[in-house]
Length: 283
Image (cartoon, rainbow, N blue to C red; front, side):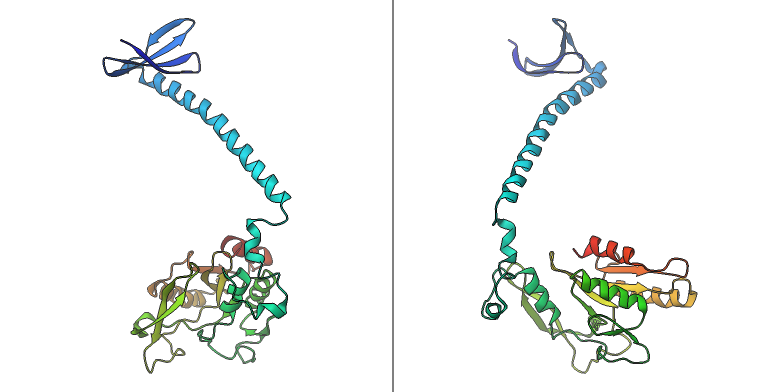
């Protein structure tokens, strides 16, 4: 006894599936005739199966696109919607913000707390000029180069929080008996680091001082940003290669947790390059 299971129009006819004595047989029906597709015609069977899948997929995709378009229309027509949840705190009068404990923490409030983190150790008093740091940013810091000042100013203009030249404690100098806990984005307490060992100075040669520590407010992910300003100079390249290797040794991945920008005499840094990096990692 034969049970007709399914049929679908293929390229030149209908692909018929029949079960005969517990086994599935494939037939091509065209012009009122059925032709058995044996193993020797496996290639033809694959083509007809793919044709069926494609025909069923197209209307499904079209339905999904139509549904998404209807959702967009609804969201645009709503004065208040799901996307407003994170902006409620921002819209409060400044006088009320200090009285409110926002939940969930808005992106701007999270960034504000991150920017005001007193646990970060800076390499120096950054609002003071010295013989190495002579270029002033819009935030009033003094940095080492015009390019660093340009990066800092564009970060500020784009609303990307940053810290300049923080001290990163080497892992071997961490006291694992003194963990640091904080509340994460999910509202749960989590381990965020360890206190440095007694007597360790964050200003010695083993401490890493990345050019920038930056924050993606949307994902709440931190990145280190290193700018290499003289890639035409061999000695400079050797020095900074060792610097990048030290980041790797400390567990940071170049291109993932560490952003690297560069420039040379023939390839100066410009606003387009900086904005491309910001678009890729920080918005």
